Each structure stands twice: as structure tokens, then as C-alpha cells.
Length: 429
Ligand code: RM4
Ligand code: MN
Ligand code: MN
Image 1 (spheres, rainbow, N blue to C red):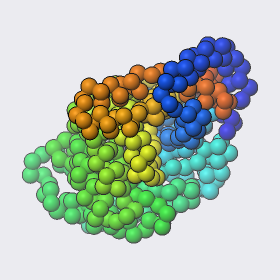
Image 2 (cartoon, protein in one colour):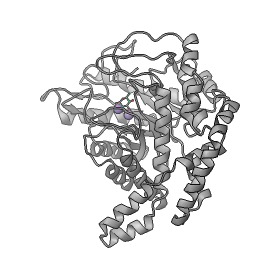
Image 3 (cartoon, rainbow, N blue to C red):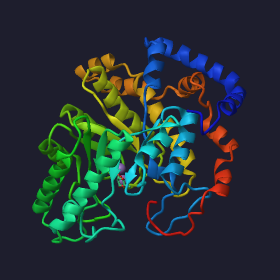
Image 4 (cartoon, helix red, strand yellow):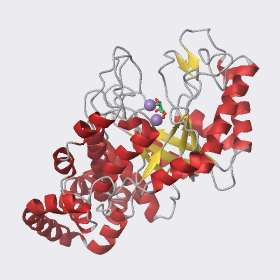
């Protein structure tokens, strides 16, 4: 750690915020002294939280129409790791990276692992991409991958996922997330039943190759790029498939992969109850899979999701959840966006730790609706920034990470040594 951003830079920047933070933190401590919460155990829980950064999230994304690359953009996984290390040195809760293959392919995986670990970063769940045609593939994924009508294309997609497992093993990863773009754009295009059968048969072949201590995360999405039907369209379908596949198969909830107004926190609760919640892709959205910064549109929803997680955890019902961010930034510097997202996520988690769950249960049990919602709002309305800032300061991270990042002129400096990504083609990376 602190290879990407030197400790003394952070330390010096922190000096100018110390006085204000001390006052804010004192106010926070006074405020929560009314809640019967042990501040040290609160700090410990927050300090041990980690959310993985998406390797693809540090590049500037595009829309269907254009991509406007920023300066000094990372061009390969090594440069992406450097950017992720900058974020982690500043915020301290993002010490892992979730890679995407074949986007992040390299010749020497042990060398990549060593390079990454030298920054205090390790590899989280690996993601497979069968939504594009890789260079050397025979056949095409245009009409599907794991569910394609043609067996040889399905085999190719299965093989790519198995290759991902191999790459992940070399990198020290412990899981594979499978999201497929398969689906239909027109009524009649696809047989719903047989395409789901083909999905399961393909996934079974991948599942067989999972190492003992790995998990496989199934990611659903209601539409896009297929706009009429998607094979793994919702959490119910995802659950049924995970159940069918076996114990190591779990469901992943990407916050943007729900139709508008869906009660995502309830889905989280259901999946916990069914023992099939495996992970998250955090982001936020207004309309669909917008991939906006976490908590940028609906921070209350993010809090309500953490509220389900914390409540379940207190009841001993939660284990091994993979937290990842999945965002694509079109008009911001991705590093700044990811810093803000990590902050929103930790704030939402911290607020959920302030909820008085016993009183909430009592209020629910006597149908006291106003009291129930007041209990949640009380925790939500407490400003936890001073707490999270104090934790960062104590761990030698930045009190104000955006401020320190801007003072580095990082992208400008990188633009002198990194290749220009050029072009304005559309697409995610
Ligand atoms: C998808 C989905 C996947 C991500 C790709 C880039 O919509 O969210 O998790 O790997 O986008
Ligand atoms: Mn996702
Ligand atoms: Mn998505």
C-alpha cells in the first residue's frame, strides 16, 4: 500500500482538515452516545469492510453513440491496477480488483499477480465476457453464447468461462461471475424454454470445473442488449438456476439490473432467506442499467439494502458476500467517480450499523408504522462522514480523497507516459 500515493502527501494534505474533523467527530460521538452503540466496535466493523473495484470501471465508458476518452487513460490491466491502487491508497476500503476476461488478458498471470500485490491489491471475483466476439473465435456470439442454438458456439462460450477460472486461479481469485447478454429482440425470435435449458447445460459444464473453494455468481438483467427478452432476466430465474447448479452457485444483485421501481432491498432479503445471496455489483440508475456512481441518485435505497444485510448479519444469516462496484463513467474522471462511490457505499453501511433493530422489530410487531419508519430515518439522517473520515485518518488514508487526488495531477502526468486511447467509438471500454 501507499506505492501509488505516497504517505507523506496524504499526511500533509490531512493536516489542513484535522481541526475541522476533530470538531465534527466530537459532534458525531455526542450524537451517537444517545444510541447505546460502542464506537470502537463500530469503527472495527467499518474498517474491515472491503468493496472490489471493477478493472473496466477505471476506463472511460461510452454510450451507444460515442465515447469521449479522457487523458491518461489506462490501456491495459497493469495501468488499470495503478489507477485502482491510487483509489485504495486514498480511501483504504478498495483493496481488491475484479478483472474481466478477455479484456484483461495477459501473457504472464503470475507476473500480473505479483505486480498487483506489490500495490497492496489482490484479485477478487473474475468476470467472463461472452457478449463480444474475441479475436480468435470460430463462430460468433451475435445470436447468443452459453444459450446459442449452435452447439459449437456454446462450447466456445463454455471454454471461455473455463479459461476464466484458470486465469482466476493463477491470480488468487475465488469466484467467477457469469453475466450473459443472451436473449431476443423480437417476439418469436427465441424459444424461452429451450434457451433456458441450454443455459443450464452450459453452466453445468462450467460448474464442474470450479475449484472446491470457489463460488459461481449468476448475474441477471431484464434487458439490454437484448430488448425483448433476456434468458436470465430476473432474480427468480437466477435463483432457480443457482439452486439447480448446486451449492457453489449463488445469485449476484447488480443494482442497475432491475426494472424501474423494483424493490431491490426486498430481493436482497429474499435471497438471504433462500441462502443464495452471493454478491453485489454496486452502481446507481435513473432508468435502467445506467451504471452511474453508487448512491448518486438514490442513496436511501443503498442504505435500505445495507439495512437488510446488517440485520441479517446480526441474526447470523449472512456469510461470504462479494461486494463489487460495477460502473461505467462517460463524463467524469473514473477515479473520482469510484472514490465517491466507495464513500457512498461505506456511508450506507455505517448508517445501517446505527439502526436500532430491536426497537424496529418491536415497532413492527405492534404495527407501529410511523415508529418503524422513524427508526430507519433516524439512522439514515445521522451524518457518518466524520466517522468514516476519522477511520481513514487513523489508517493514514485521506480525509478528503478527492482533494488529495486533484492535487496529484495524476491523469495529466500519466498522459505523458501512457498511450493515447484516441478514437470516439462507442462501447464500454
Ligand atoms: C453488464 C453487467 C456485467 C458487466 C458488463 C460490463 O451489464 O453488469 O456485470 O460485466 O455489463
Ligand atoms: Mn454487473
Ligand atoms: Mn450492467
